[in-house]
Image 1 (cartoon, rainbow, N blue to C red):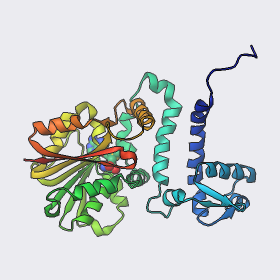
Image 2 (image 1 turned 60 degrees about the vertical axis):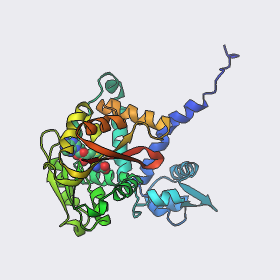
Image 3 (image 1 turned 60 degrees about the horizontal axis):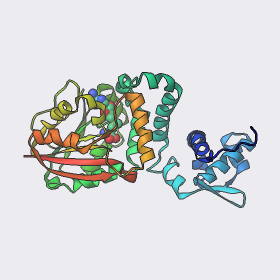
Image 4 (image 1 turned 135 degrees about the vertical axis):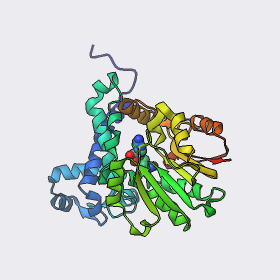
Length: 336
Ligand SMILES: C[S@@+](CC[C@H](N)C(=O)[O-])C[C@H]1O[C@@H](n2cnc3c(N)ncnc32)[C@H](O)[C@@H]1O
């Protein structure tokens, strides 16, 4: 028996299985604000004292972070790499702490309930009304968008024919309102109305970051399942990362939103792209998470949005990709 040798290396599996542990260590180091400290070089001893950790554990953690390309070590002193400086330092405009914690709550939920979720998926769906309603969740969703998809989507929308003449826009499921704010920055004549669930609007009004927008951006409590928007009213209607929640009633939901676009105005959907360039393993992991959590496919095929809009008389379809690895599609359609 002991002379038997396997034909295949176990190494690829080992790496994947260790990945969860490495992810948790990174999340914890963000929570502990290790990267705020390592904007200037520090020894392991200094980090252990200032963060309040055991010295041996600190050395092991720092070594792990070096191997992940998050910090460098020279002459026994550790310092952030540009990657950590940009995304993991709390004063950076692209800080991902709240977004990482929000993501981690989903991973933890799936991990601890996996046996049950594989037999009975979709349990998180009923919690969607509360998931996005805290100040911290709003901050997390906003910071996630700042990884690049918001900037790309805003660039795409600002280049739509007629953007400079737009006056009224609507942000359905707008949550943190950053898409609206970025578009208001690009067009001083534009005003925005944000619609979201009542508890989200309450949280939004508590955390609205900049009073500069107060007279041009108004949030309204709204339920896309039951409430109607004003008919033929907006020059631009944006629905970003919301339609996946309504996969079972996609045509009806698109119809409900699209009736609010004024003739000549644009409907813009921003969503995860089923045909995009994201690596297959990323797509499979995300697909797995959303299927077991919410029993829906987070990725939406272009045709599933385009066809209902064509039936409603929309024409001139334009598309772009957004975000790291072009993981999202932004699709614009103009009402006749
Ligand atoms: C993933 S977030 C997207 C936030 C933002 N649009 C973005 O792209 O970053 C989904 C948003 O849809 C909202 N939402 C979910 N169900 C809704 C409903 N029935 N009516 C209105 N908004 C809803 C959530 O509250 C949340 O703000």
